[in-house]
Structure formats: structure tokens, C-alpha cells
Image (cartoon, rainbow, N blue to C red; front, side):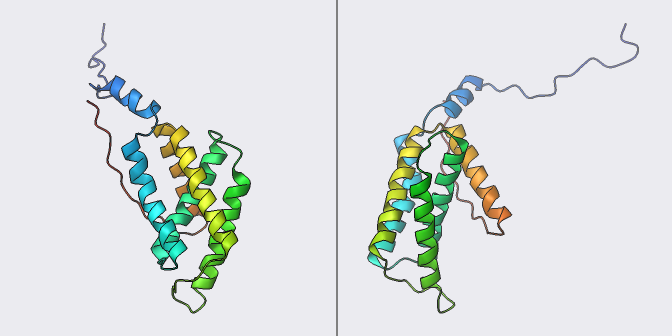
Length: 165
């Protein structure tokens, strides 16, 4: 007997692409997706190296280092913390010099700063080549949470999504 209760309803919407969704989350990033992520980072590194970097270029590099540290903390790709922290210190030094007047003025770099930041970009490339899509999203979310907790501002950039077909 139902005792006057309506029949039970399914509370989730069935997904016609369940296997496609699973495959998308467990596969590594494609070459196109890596290019989308790394293109702006490498362009910012070039601008920094040439002494014409804007505050946005600095921010892109600082974000990539923060995400690389989050990937390190997630334990997927490990053993790079010293290099990443050196790059983080180098970027802080660059920002201090560039903002000495109160507004951003592109500054020349010391060789060690350039070397540290360049190494961090190369290591971040290696990390991204090893991650699945789901792991990359989790690391980015962790980095965003840390930035917000430290009182920083998060600027969201959207990448093209893989199709399920």
C-alpha cells in the first residue's frame, strides 16, 4: 500500500553523455587546451624578459606560479616547490620595483629573477602535461581560494570546453 503518498520521483536528471563526461575528466589536457593555457603565460614571460611587461603580464605569471604551487600541494606532480617558491619571490621583487612610484612602471630584471620565472613556467608546463582535466580544475580552485583568503582579487578567464561527442 502507498498510504496515500505519491510514487517516488527520480531527483537527478539523467545524463545522456555519462561516459563522455567521465572520459573528459580523466583524460589529460589536449595540445589545444595546453596552448590556450600556456600561450598567455609565455607571452607574459616574453614581455617581462623584454622589459615591457604590464601589471597584467605580471599578474598572469604570478597566477601561474600560484597554480603550480597548488598542483604541487595536491600531490599529483611533486618535487618542484623550491623552484616555484624562488619564482614567487622573484615576482614579488619585480612588483616592488615596478610599483615603487605608486603605479606600474616596467622594470629591468636581474638575471636570477628571469631564470627563476622562466624555470617556473617550464615546470608549470610539465605539470599541466601530467594532469587530468579534473585535477587541473581542482588545483585552480585551490589557488583561487588561497588568493581570496589572502585578500587578493581573482580574475576569471574561461577556456573553450571540450565537446562530448
